[in-house]
Image (cartoon, protein in one colour):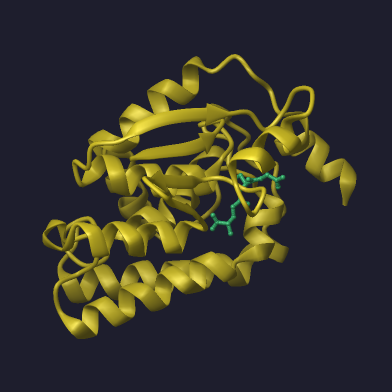
Length: 219
Ligand SMILES: N[C@@H](CCC(=O)N[C@@H](CS)C(=O)NCC(=O)O)C(=O)O
């Protein structure tokens, strides 16, 4: 099984799929593609039917879309606990993961993932306030009901889905509640997250169009 993913520093979707594989101890090979450089889009398109990464390759299966990758892994490794074990919790985990997958666009557009950067105060709060409030509500409700430290107690795919948000809160020092900040720290303390972070820090590439200077000039 192989995961094709992009620049660790910038690729938030890659991080999500990779965290699930790594945290749950699933053996896999890695292939890195770049989000910059000559012909980068064509290179990704040759490897991924959607032209986007991550893509999971398992024999004949070629699976793009992070949620589909997670479900495939959950089907293949049902004993790993990728989703919570209770039916109700599993439904809620899938619901908040879908909400993350399809939503929070104001936050995602205004504050791109950039793991090695530190830009406190660079992002205007007003346009992203509603997204942040909803994220605080999800994190607060679920950790208080489960007892934490993660959304459903132990780490599940739902936490992987929100991990890039934790990094955005850190990179741009976004103002969030103490409870949300505690959750951010839990994500950062996760060994798999630390491994990704360390490798991201070693990457030599700057992807201009994913940098805050470029994004703020564009709008
Ligand atoms: N809906 C996709 C989104 C994947 C995605 O947007 N990946 C970015 C990298 S983080 C990408 O491949 N960008 C290349 C492009 O837009 O051409 C998923 O859930 O995996």
